Image 1 (cartoon, rainbow, N blue to C red):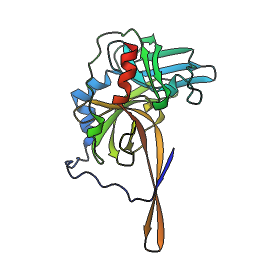
Image 2 (cartoon, one colour):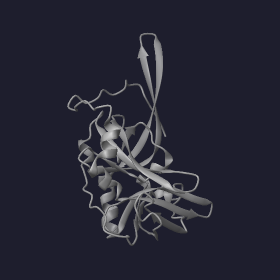
Image 3 (cartoon, rainbow, N blue to C red):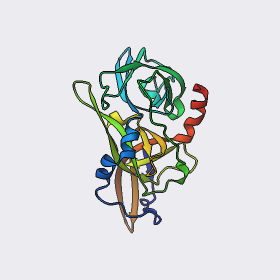
Image 4 (tube, rainbow, N blue to C red):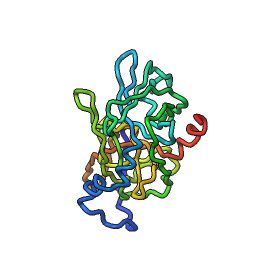
Amino acid sequence: MVVSSDTARYEPSPIQEPTPTSFILRLISDPKVKEVQEAHFMIKAEHPMGIKAGTGVAVGQELILTDFHLVGSSKTGDITATEIRISQPHMPWKEWYALAEVEATDPSVDLAVLEFEPHGELPSLSFGDPSQLRPGEQVYLIGHEFFPDGIGLIYPRDAEIVGDFPSGSPFFGVTPPVIRGFSGGGVFNLQNQLVGVAIKDYILIDTIRDGGRTYKTVEQGTIVTRIDWAIHLLKKAE
């Protein structure tokens, strides 16, 4: 998606405290973030045209929230996955996997809910309020990085809220962009509350006019679906 505007870039919110440069190191060592990681799964969905792989986040003991495009066709809105396997290669039971079924979908916001039988007790995540997020605010994402042998490494990635999505939109943006394996992974505020699900990368083009000159700036980021837009899906799947 390409968004174009004639306005200058946003300014970080003055209410936010300065973020230390060691933020990503804090995430990796934070026990609360490690607990959040335990709620995440690698998803591999078999389709007639091949495998789609990404991330999902457990929002209950038997439900996983992820992206619709991992299990279906974004063009038609149909579920095309013939088999969906979920696993946690970052956990001690790395050889374990389960089959999951699609319980509810909303292609318009690229969300799907899967049902599965968990290996054991999963962390109970709390939801945050995406409407309280401000441009410049620090958040973090959890997702998988996939390697050639198919085993993924899950880790947190620091990010920052951008202010270029209109109020009332089901989406918000973060920067910088993340790799493809993060699709379907959770986005969390600094209180470790789930505020959204990562969808896909975007490119934002800004046009700035200064006197007789015109400048174009390009910014890349990740589109995130707000968690409050998933509530109706979760109720439907219960």
